[in-house]
Image (cartoon, rainbow, N blue to C red; front, side, top):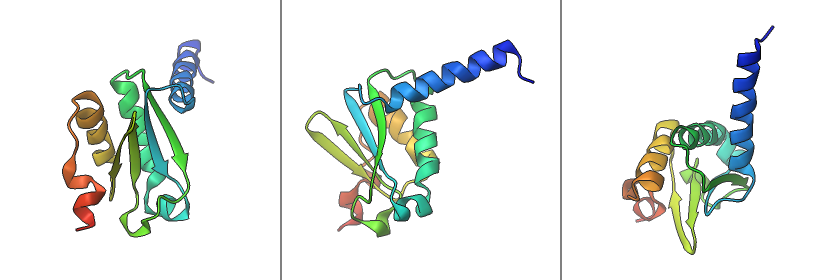
Length: 121
């Protein structure tokens, strides 16, 4: 049996997660969640992103999912949209996903070593 405090903590986390997926943010993070992405670890990437976004209390970020992003060999991958600017990150791990939140979303620095351009050369 859960205590009231435990239930309240679960409720607050669920509300944050719903806000992250509601589509109301200025910044969108789209994770490829087709079979290739899921098999490569996209679910763990999504969880790591949402945890780190909540940790930093970022209010203007939406996390969504899509089908295959078109480069299965580079999965798991995500596309980060900031207005008209799009950055595609590839070959991700949960740790790299957390680093993207901290470095790219919080500090404004693109992790160029994980972008699609580096892997397509």
